[in-house]
Image 1 (cartoon, rainbow, N blue to C red):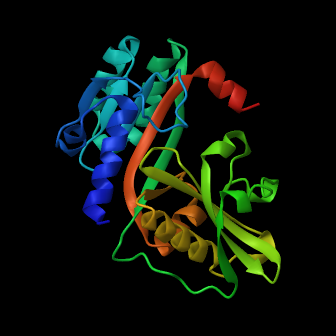
Image 2 (image 1 turned 30 degrees about the vertical axis):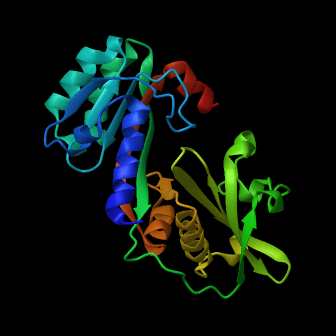
Length: 255
């Protein structure tokens, strides 16, 4: 699979996620569309969603519910697209959303592999590919980034790093979309900074590609360690997202 094919699949999925067209992400002007969560949207999206902003680097595509049209449209026409994802401009948006009971909730950067950089990386420990039946007993707190106990049915493949018989690192992926599998990784504290995380991530990405799926990786902009792992593993920044949710949902998360 080429880089061009992967980015096209990713844009097609993002279009399904918010109800726009692939061409909207390639426009040199910001684009507004009514928000529509597609039947084949990524499985972690949960309604209600007031607005969702996505940028692949050329513009921002903003999708919102009808009640937020005026606010969203003014926002993306007031600020440069990349400033729409940062303060102080987000404060402008939040002040207007708050009267409707919503605020900015999620902000993240997403990575796709670069096939010219992706390769198996050296690891001092044995790496093993684990199919679904082989990691069913690994839903433990130390592997909470690699596996999700709330959505076990979506976890499809793992790569484990072993020191003898001891599992010391785990990368797992969830089938969050029909053609895209998301990677998460954990390494035991005492084994960190030894190149294990990037060896696991790159190995799992290649296994995903062998199965005809697109691997993707997500982290917060402030999670420098995770972003460095993505880059060391052969991934590059692909798109950014920002999602607006009800204030009571946000407050519940902050308890």
